[in-house]
Length: 219
Ligand SMILES: [Mg+2]
Image (tube, rainbow, N blue to C red; front, top):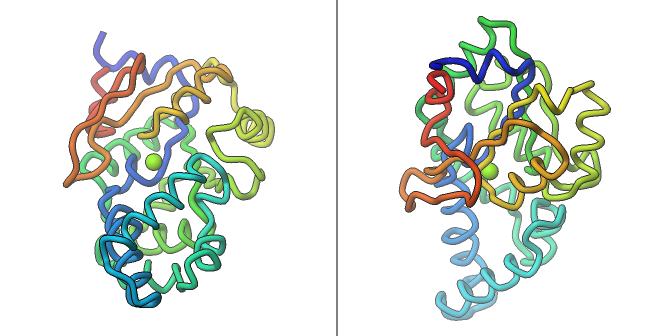
């Protein structure tokens, strides 16, 4: 039945990068601007810098350090927050995000933003987009000392905010995070198929997906 998903829940937990916001910003930062500046800093060819940056990022994927700008500023000898600032014009709200959040507010459904992003990056993105006004709670995994990929994150999030997992909807663009949320017991777990407006569509094995959040209003 159309619209029945939202009658089965009282809390929506939403990822930020790739779910509320276009992941293109993050791609440009981590896979283009940072390698370019690292190559200049080290006096090395761009292609070599791109490989080194990719490999070093990959080695820590899924850990809290991977999401920590202070960590990468130290690792690469670059001011990552300053690089973010250079690309601020690319921080974009994805189509359908505000329509979905407005609908939740109108129905009195609690909305929670839960991100692995560093608190400074989170603050920048909320300032640039104004999305903070839609949320009852905004949480960075750094507060809990565990990323969303880890069960402890979900234990701490649900305990602190009093979330009933069987009546919660969670949406994210990261398969490992979807699996972690589902394994913990979040009942309704959905993936985003098109997190990067200029990247390929992706599928999340075993999880239903949408391109845009507003599509959930018709589920
Ligand atoms: Mg994401």
